[in-house]
Length: 524
Ligand code: BG6
Picture 1 (spheres, rainbow, N blue to C red):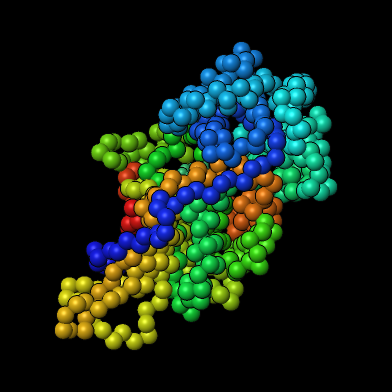
Picture 2 (cartoon, rainbow, N blue to C red; picture 1 turned 135 degrees about the vertical axis):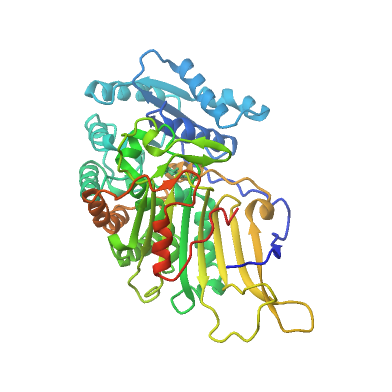
């Protein structure tokens, strides 16, 4: 598609920069991070909790307990670890420094081995003391920042140590909630086993399954874009939409997560969760209300309408050595903790088919990969051309079909391409682009996804968390493909160079449907 360089920016009208609305305030609680010094806590949880505190989103009284096995660490040493995480996240301005001591005095460390009953007994004892520091404490939030394989035993042992009382009613006080991270299971069968184990000791309203994509501002904006604007909703169907392309490309490799990634691969890492969530929010029917169950009911319906992916509608790839941003980078098989002959895919491209009235016949092409030429996550909706084109394109140009692109990241925003008359005597048309960028339009910094999700978990709002039936429906879509790929080793891995646009097979998949992938980085 040739899109003219004529781009018009859209601005937000009214007071600028737009003032922030006040954060809802959760009730007093204690947050317990299991795996307090791990990668997730370090990169995401500590910065998010502190930013929430700076934004006045933490309860007026709270405590945070970090749990790790290290007996040499005490409260003071632990506070220094957290301060280090904040610094690494770039939070060390003067205001933050001032408020740091207020935050730090609410941080406590518990050395406990979560593999033993004694570890949980110790946690129980220490929590009783910490609870005393939060007058009228209303709840406990356990965040399992641990390898997913530990979830079943940790949940069971929390319950056995009386740390996780089963609740009948979401209104019960004090509440106890457990947050876990994707991937939920390794496949449909293990996801069901995890679910059965959890349901034995707790209610569904106590379990918060994080897919951090749902906490992203731009992902939530998909709902607003679709359901607050009748303009888009009326054409959001097979009569007007020709195809949908969803891309999540990363320049990063697997970094130091080789062990995890070798087990996961691209399908479990991002397709079964983040990408199917993007697809679902794009394709779902309007919910009757913006409530946890109404939204998730509609999501489950569309997930169940997606046909399990067949091997001939999917392509896998693995990066080899290459060149990225001016430097030589190693291939996946040369990364730390990766087998020298690993068959793990780091790239996937798939064509999804949705069997319902709205989407019958509209292909949803989805691709994701590591070590690609550019980073960017977007959803591009291409509309059908008019049945009869009355106007020629301007000399040297080609008219593109209408295209709506929701940029999830970077340059978060939305763009719309449409045709206009070229000024002059001749009736010639040209495609132009209207562009809305959040940062320029609103002039505010977005909240990190984890801030939103941790706040919602403290508030008891499950709208942005995955429900068990959603998780199972998503596994049902990819399970047959995973089984096939695991039984049939790839013909040639690595099949794309780091820094490239991915394997040529992905272009062939597209070409079979007569289409072409959008350029990587087209949205930045
Ligand atoms: C994580 C995956 O869930 O999402 C990573 O495990 C991936 O492999 C990351 O890099 C992408 O998240 P974001 O927010 O950077 O797009």
